[in-house]
Length: 189
Ligand SMILES: [Fe+2]
Ligand SMILES: [Fe+2]
Image 1 (cartoon, rainbow, N blue to C red):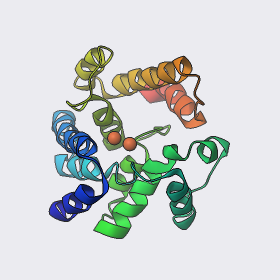
Image 2: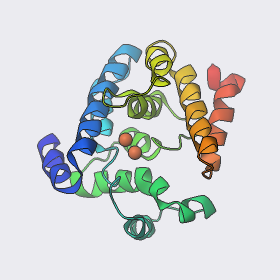
Image 3: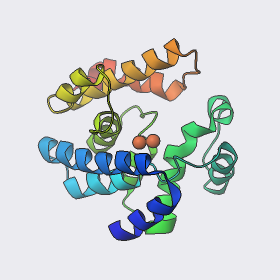
Image 4: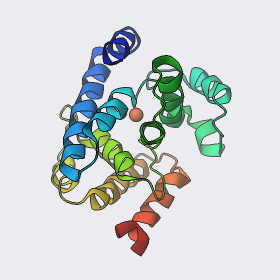
C-alpha cells in the first residue's frame, strides 16, 4: 500500500509537502514506539494524513459533500480545515485503509477532538514536530511530545490558538473544545 500512496502523492503534491508527509510518517512511528502505541498504525496514519492538503477550496467542499462530512460556518468559510476529514475519506476509498483508529487519527490531525485516543494525539503532534518544520516555538513541543503526550497536545493547541489570534484568523470551536478537554481532570488523567 505504501508504494501506491507514494506514487499517488508524487503526482498530487509538491516535493516540500511530500517531505512533510514522510516526516510525519517517521515521527509518528517514533512517538508511537515511545508511548506504547502500534508504530505501524501510526506510520500509516502519518503517510495518509494530508492526502487532500493541496485540494482547492471548491474541491474540498465537494469532497466533503460526497463523504457526508458535516459543514459548519467556520469550515464553510475556511474549506482548508476540511482537508483532514477528506483525507480520511480518501484513505479508505483509494487505498483501502479501513482501520477506524487510523481513519479517526487522520480526521483529527488539524482540529483535534475532545477525548481523542493516543494514536490521534500522536498524529496531531507529529504534524507539528516532524523534522522539516522549523521555528523556535517547536523546541519545547518536541521535548514534551516524548514525555507527556496530552501535555504536548495542549501545548500544540495553545500554539495553534496563538497563531490564529496573531493573524486575526477564525478559530474553529473544536480546537477550543479539545483544549478544554485537555485542561479538565479527565483530559489529563
Ligand atoms: Fe494537514
Ligand atoms: Fe500535515
